[in-house]
Image (cartoon, rainbow, N blue to C red):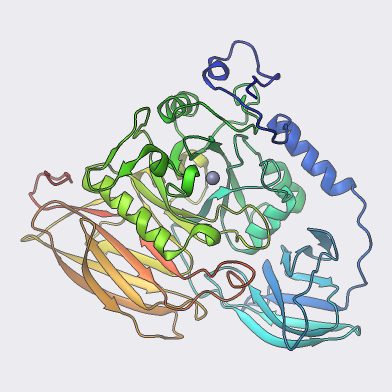
Amino acid sequence: MRQRASWIVPGLALALAFGVAAHGCRRRAPAGQQVADAAASSSSAPEPPAPSANVTFRVSDASGRSIPCKLTWIGRDGTPTPDLGFGRPTRSVEGGLAAHHRVFSLTGQGAISVPSGSYDLFVSRGPEWSLHQQALSVRPEPQTLNVTLTRLITREGWVSADAHVHADPSWDSKVPLAARVHEFASEGVDVLIATDHNVVTDYRPEIERAGAKGLLETVLGSELSTTDWGHFGAFPLKHEQDWWVLHGVRMTGTPADQLLRAVRRHGPTALVTVNHPRLGKLGYFNVGGFEPKSARFAHAHVSFDFDAVEVMNGAKHGSLEAVDQVMGDWFGLLTDGRRITAMGNSDTHELLTSYAGYPRNYVRLTDPTVDGERLAAALREGAAFFSSGPFVEATIGDKSLGEVARAVEKKVTLSVKIRAAAWVSVARLRAYVNGRVAKELPIAPSNETERFAGEITLDTPDDAFVVVRVDGDRPLPPVVGGPPAETLFPVAITNPIYVDADGDGKWKARKK
Ligand SMILES: [Zn+2]
């Protein structure tokens, strides 16, 4: 059935440009209304009681200050992995919020109820911190856990951001906004970019309510989700109920070129991303028939008016094969002279098998105040890399990601530094020139934070783009992947440093 949504505000050309079909999905209220509803439901719905708390935790940094953290409980020796929500998808606990077998704490201090049994407990605060892991026997009697985590990777000038995040305002997610705030803050992600399907969600009231100001920033955006042309991310967007007329309803019959034009008109500063470009019929590159060799689409009504491509999409769809394929598409675009940014996001829809901030983007921002427009601008410049674990710095001389370096006698010297927490495996470094592997180096296993620091000489007879990719050979521990989720491997991919070889001060694509 095809119908116009009844709440379309008169006089909005955009409304008329979109064919809006309900497709039997939940009819959603306008975005502002949803934010209010989510808040009301999280505070007023009565919670059936959980057994009284028997495990008290206190998680601190090396200075003794308690810190946000995530506790992951996995059953062992015949004990099942627990449901710490005791029948509810999420439950408020002292010092945080429990969901499935995890607790997200903003304060690092609290108390929870854990069924008696044997467990592997993991305490984590994201990939820049050490991981505490211990076998633990839990009984009804109270016990106290004191855990210290150490920050291993400092990163002045880099902001971490996950630019693909779903929660309750999306038709395919039931996660309350409060749970997302707890999850992202405990994972050490600096910026949560809201991208619910065809809705602009504003997390600011929820961040304030949770007491997470100073821990987590947010940027308002949306995932423009069509049934027939794939999904596109856009941020920052204004939280104007009047113009965003789609209100979470699936879009059908809106060609990509028309959709992207409309987004540019309404959010001129927004970064526009092609999300999961090869995910079946939800992938724009599949639907449009994109061919990386020619860097052309086979079909009509396509557009190249996007800024970034999601090269890695979450734990569910972020297999290495999928990353390789989209990386090939991205190299095709760059080879054709299009400066498109590579991104990696979690595309998290629930709290069990998708993980906030894995992977996440690290964006170079010298000014510490995060704002959506500056974040979008830096990403558009390619001043970023994404990672599910390792922290990778790559420079040529004084030029960093997204900048143009000068070749000297048709060569450049690439400096690479790789840091990773001991629980993140790093096994291989590859340097690509114009989309081809130019140097590949094995990296020995190590518990040191610094895994590699060195220089690599690359031949650049012509203008070129240089990309660094780092891979681990062991999957991430159950704080990130493992049953029941897909296994997630450590991967980091930088945006290019562009090379000017002919001395005109610019990077140009090679002639085909
Ligand atoms: Zn999507």
